[in-house]
Image (tube, rainbow, N blue to C red; front, top):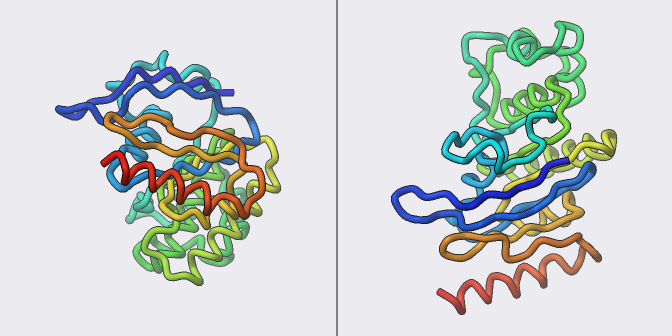
Length: 223
């Protein structure tokens, strides 16, 4: 589906080192690592937003539809939710159906600034769905949400993935609990410059916490 052959990325100094990985349909990857290590940088490279990364470093992307849920909702504030989704390629009826699927039935005529943070993030997720993505990229989708809102969004995303078994996902998060719910594969980014120190399928979900503890202790030992 997608092959990463990233040689590296620098912002004055090296941030990402060599990143080599293959993403298959149905992969639900949670990408963890220390704060500031380059997780969002890697996600932007995969999405094609970082034009300093050669296009040939992300093999297969041109054949995929990609939905990207940013930390900020990035909805056009002067357009209704329905209009925002129509800009992503949905018909008016499809837009309303996507809003229903994320728990926003009846909100199509609302402007983004009329929504709470949690609702705006759900609307942005609906916009991702409007492109009918093969690959869903999520950049800390639960950040700044209260626990109830975060749990509701996790359940919603898990349901979307279950309903679309061919869809792949990469979710940047700091919380191993998110991986327990969403992931069937785990990436751990660390090092200077950062590389994937761990890339493997998730076995027993209850083992994720222990694995992350070991990886984080290695990070502290090496710092």
